[in-house]
Amino acid sequence: MPEQKIIEIEVLRYLPEADQAPHSEVYKVPFTDDMSVLQGVQYIKDNLDGSLTFRWSCRMAICGSCGMMINGIPKLSCETFIRDYYPKRITVEALANFPIEKDLVVDLSGFIEKLESIQPYIIPKEPRTVEQGEYIQTPAQFAEYIQFTSCINCTLCYAACPQVGLDPDFIGPGAMALLHRYNMDSRDGGQAQRMELVASVEGVYNCGAVGYCSEVCPKKVNPGNAVNINKINAAKDYFLRFLSPKGGAK
Amino acid sequence: MKTRKRSNVPIFWLLFGAGGMMAALFGPVLVFITGIAVPLGLLLPKNTMSYENMLAFSQNFIGKGFIFAVIFLLSWHAAHRIFHELHGIGIHQGAVAKLLTYGVAFIVSLIAAAILLGLGF
Image (tube, each protein chain N blue to C red):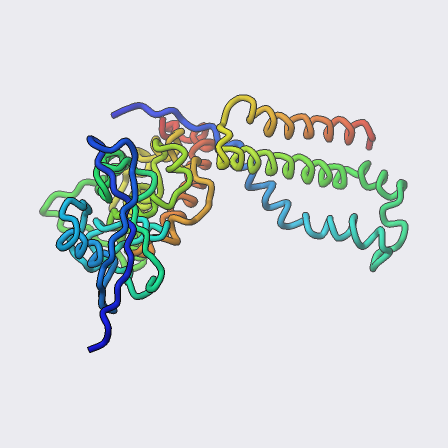
């Protein structure tokens, strides 16, 4: 039998009620080549320290709950493999730019509020009755927004965004990608309602066009693109509102 | 629903965008002509940037407009970029940062306009 390989995993631990500040602990974890970083962390919890706390669910990069800073880069720990780091040590920390709730679990309430604020649902252009039948959409209209539906709310883009780090009120990349998804849907008529947020001081102009959000996105949503398209939309709204009969968004 | 304050950034962002476009289109070739080709006598005639030529260029309506557009837009572009980079390195968007960036761009624009108009047509 081949020799058992051991990797060192350094985990940022923090219990706000008991600890003054977060501190690191190093664990020696035996692993096989098919093991993800998530499985490594699960090994620690099952065998070395049962108090270690982290979120996970699907193990297949679709639930978006196991995001962590792995060697300083926001990643889904379920699709990041230990073998790619061995024999170097792996550092695992809670997602950057969020308050830590415990160990690797972050407080997402700010993000959830932002998500609600974009009105993430179709606001019908013309409401239809059941008798009128379904909304018809062409493949070309579908293609306009499909990319932005792939967001799994993993918040890796928030951990990557330097502007979110500087100003937690910034609406941020993920919520903007989803806002754009609804704006681009041919069945939706809510763009003017959502413009108030897009054009506000918390809106798109906080973005410095770094693009790291799109780089770390595990679903290739390209939130940076959504933000930048909406800078143009907000600029149009800023100047054209004087010409629009309704006066544009408030 | 909470009421939100509209951002005034679009004004500065559009100047920034226009300046970026000007910089990309004309920046390198201006550096080449004024900094390399003319001083070294490459490609262009020796007197390309002589006083008489430049004066005529800046007294021409289109030449005047071009010089102003380059100076005006590039300085607002630079101001916006420096302002945001200051924020990025932790110097936050107070009145001082605004004065040092947009204020300077404003003064540069005024001086450019005054000189260009003073040269006559």
